[in-house]
Amino acid sequence: MPPGMSYRHAARKVVAMCVSDFAAKGVRPDSFMVSLGLRRGISSSQVRELAKGFVDAQREWGVRMVGGDTNEAGELVIDCAMIGFADRVVGRDGARPGDLVVVTGPFGFTSSGLRILIGGARASKSFRKKAVESVLRPSPNLEGGVALAPYMNSSLDSSDGLARSLHIICDAGDVGIELNLLPAGRGVTAFAKANSLDPERLVLAGGEEYVVVGTLTPESLSRAKRTLDRVRGELLVIGRVTNRRGEVTLRVGRSTRRINDEGWTHLR
Image (cartoon, rainbow, N blue to C red; front, top):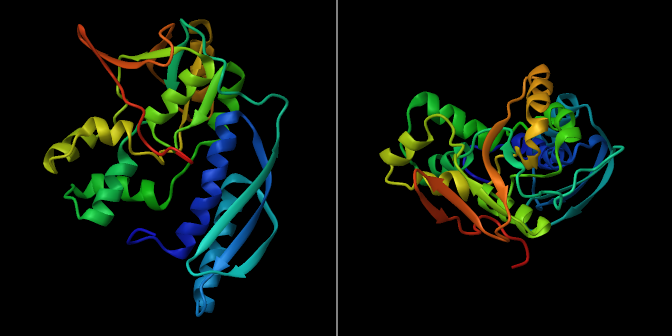
């Protein structure tokens, strides 16, 4: 765990990760189970902190903890399995040329927060608070994801990074994506400059933002935005789907360049 993360934070975050996946699919979670691997010598107060984190998650997203398992391990292990229900689950393979590429929040705070916590990067007081909070207490918008789902033809959560998410959509739908906007959070560019970091990498390759990345038709955009407004969500249009298979690019003015497939890739 990064410095500053408590056992309570960790327990809540594991559930948040599952909630984010469900939100991106338009599925309302019903219940979850947790398997714990606890180190020999863990204190009773630390176990209570884990329990408090699970209770926090139950209250925040209205999902019930219904069981689990506990064993000994060399390091703290928290594994969450979640169950939910929906009439329709939004897939990853529905993007078509001409669709709009949308996200439900800004990027770069979490990667900045990790650099503050682990690397001692410099930041203003307000930016530090926002960035560190995104690491310790991520808040996927479950209501926003469920409300948005009927308008989406492809979606996933951004926990593996924005660039990785865009390439997944391209590969699944056999399409390409051209971005005309990098959805950097407020202050991310200034933070990057102050610490000699690449702001585009903070936005594209950080991961763990827990927002929805997906596509919808231009005709659906206004209705989707109105729906999200009612649940205090936001929807940013960052590009469009093209017929250039597997190619993700960023257009700035008259120039276009490729965006590499980077971020967290499982089993590679």
